[in-house]
Length: 259
Image (tube, rainbow, N blue to C red):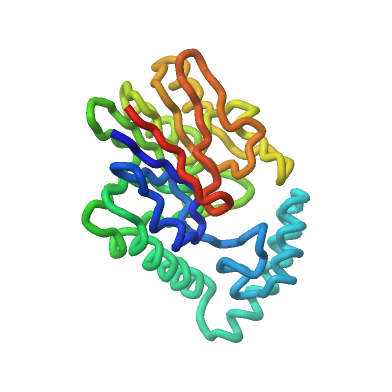
């Protein structure tokens, strides 16, 4: 069997259509929504609403770690657009997220096995999933002799993204899996080389619970995304090969696993 793994799709509709090419199925490790595009500030929800110039300033503040200043800057932008559109912020964002999900899930091949990223909104998925799309979170599935365990979402962070869990809840989701051969998550285990983004020049949030699980259980693989330009794409912990499957929006190239 051969699986293609993708993560951090971030609105890449056309590329998603061919994500299962050469494989029996595609596994998506989350982050379908494109809220803000650091490489192309005119794209995504933020860019569509506020334009590229305002988005560049917002990106610069966040990249510098000035999250309070970034929120203050965006607050005025939101005040202006809410007045212009005549709807609340939540109504406007929810509508745009649902429009993205409609396009993305229509493009996602089948069969597909999915879990949530930290920028995803799990409650919005159901209407757009098609037959052959299997969503797994704190759950396992057996595929051709191997057991795959899935843990979605991210950890609480200054970014305040939609699907963030506290450390204890996330650890409970990991523990619920039991032994697996392939550990599938959106965020990496807490290993410095896997967490450092060489372009953003900061450490992203990784999970201590995932790292402890890997050391104790020793699955064959741990696969994840979240960090777009990691210092190391692969790290071995004991017999476990830990692999960042890549920033799909940035490279549109799946990671393939065959057995």
